Image (cartoon, rainbow, N blue to C red; front, side, top):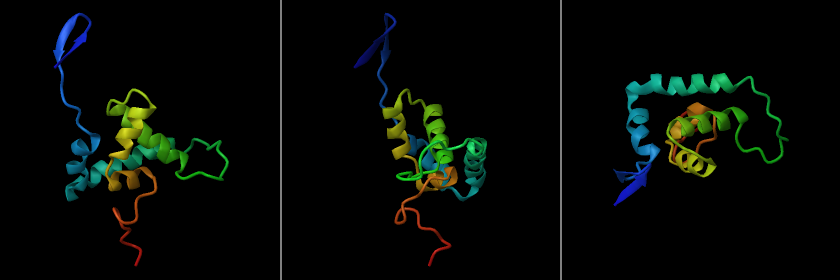
Length: 112
């Protein structure tokens, strides 16, 4: 199937989830520098004050802005696409961004 774009036919490519592109890089032990880049991106958003009330806040504003930026850099065009891409991010990447991670999928080695 082809997509019609600006009077030109382009071949339709299958969508590749973000996690497939990033998981191998993040899970590799030599990729601590990549997690460091995510942490550095989170540090850029650290000075932003959170206008939300504390009740109901699940993730720090820094983490929300960091993962939203990563989703936009991966090609998300709206909030729905951004949510889909963020949902597919590996747990170590979410942890580096400052978001809460799933305790079973990404256990904290410091906790017994």
